[in-house]
Image 1 (cartoon, helix red, strand yellow):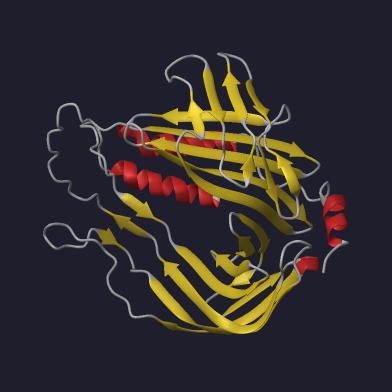
Image 2: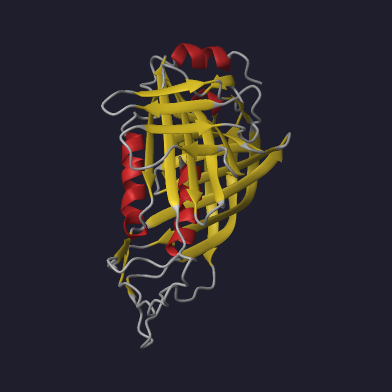
Length: 348
């Protein structure tokens, strides 16, 4: 979901650049604090490796190659001085950090009077080296990594409250050139044997004839305390995702000619008052999971759409809530143990 949010954020920025309706009212923006630690690791067999920590507790080690990636996530401890994480039979991390503050400048935007619009501390960036041990065997068909020293960086952001920026007067729209957009989010989930299979597709048509978006397919499971997400992410342009007419009681959408590594096609339909139907041959090949079907009767699916610029942010948030209602990504762990242990038997 992280990469889907990135794609949606890019689309949101583009859409917000369009003229908003007269009814839109700017509100103060609250930006929460954040701690983010980045540790790039040596590549291995074409896999790019990285270690990250979010908000001092969530530790992830990610291997990515082309459009596919595998993320291993555990609860650990991270600060600007040390990072410790236990990935169970997959490996462990225990490193000390020697970081110094980077030159800083004010990140606070100013209004026309030159006054800061945001209240709160400016972000702090630290960079330097780490030493210790990163020992991660990984899984078969997914590269591992071993390192004792290397580069590291930390970004710390503090809670800030920003007043809305003053917007210049809207220019009159040229007759016959009024921009329009339509946003769509299609999601599907299947839960079986302690694992979740997911598919998400986002598409936005900003101007007539310009359609772009992203496909994300994944398998999410647990290996003891380790959460594992195997994902494929690919952008597309053109009608790889199409939807039926909006405003009616019935809903429909089609996925066809998806970009590699996705294959096949699928159809979504929902009659008024009835359950959603999501069928087809859509599939993706994921490292450690093989050929994964992404459509079928075992999936729950939803389609969320918006074509109103005035309520874009609220609509996007509502779509995520609707997608979340399909169910979480990770099983309890106990049901996925046999599958995970079988995969461990072929570790390098």
